[in-house]
Image 1 (cartoon, chains in turn blue, brown):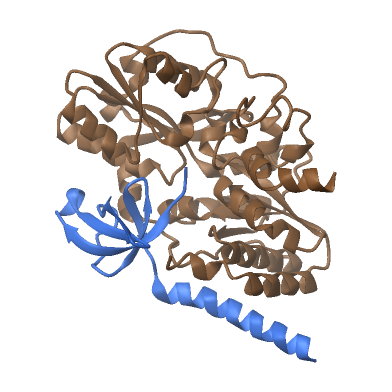
Image 2 (tube, chains in turn green, cyan):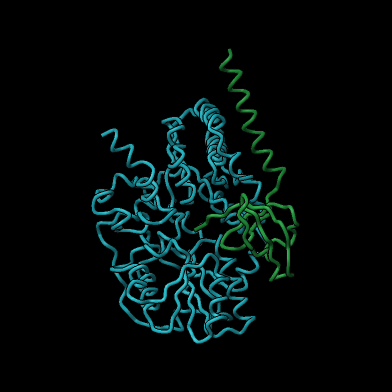
Length: 82
Length: 367
């Protein structure tokens, strides 16, 4: 029920409560309301739930999480090579 | 898909699990709240990557599972009325009430339609002005803004044939109820990432202050879950209790202000009964007085007696993390997805369904 999927905004139409984006989910395109993410622009990734974008994905934070795992991976290889 | 696939790397997950094992000095129990997280944990075997000392308890975060039998039976009665179009997300269709489900109602001629968004239900009401269109508003805080916007839109369009049957629930009061239970084993929570995307983290600070329990807002992919566990573990080992955000790529401390405004405009906090858990004060949302005209319970009043749960169903214990699904005597016998006793066996977020889908075959092989 709380499932939400990230997708890329391809185009935007309408204003305020009717502001809608065409969002690509790995190639499958679907309309989503952008009423709750007024800051969202074409090219942004948004998290979509029940037809509504509820957050704009922060690319820097996304990269930080991956960096954390890259470092753990490196440490683990170092340990193994000891 | 971007922002999904890169958080599923097996090697990195294993390295993280080894790091977690290396820093775990004592037995700890951490509860993931959301049923979506439970499914990812069981599906990817994350619990099995973790050291034996670390136990993941599955929480109550399955709105389908906690919708009380009384509201389900009421939904079926409304859906059977001539002239009604009853709309719902797909996951509610197979959830058993006291003796029925929405699929049966549809098979018997009820006009039950699955929608992807509550806005689809508003569109049906506009297209079919002679029909009464009811939307089954089930969900946590994640879904509340969408349902609120549907009501606002129906009000703007002056639709008189649209209403919500509301069974909307809130997470923080349920966590309070779990912590208040005697013998509670939960020492830290992985909070539900998408609920907090909407609500932010402010509601969890009082809980942390009162119970000294770490809360880490966590995502849904394997690496998210492992990092969430690692952050909660570090707090437990350090003797700290704070609200932290693992899922920072979408969750901000303040949540989503526009979505929260929509909730506040349309809903008010109410007491609600949770299936399997019983009544929990302040744990629900209901339409406020301004939008009372859109309340299906007022539009279709009835006074049927409150229905009873099948006593063989142990869903309440499962939802509190006190019983593993396969420990239930009915699991896989009297209770299967084809003939469920309770909702967790049919919901895509139910713990029983997760163990049935991902662990049953292996259990059979071992036996």
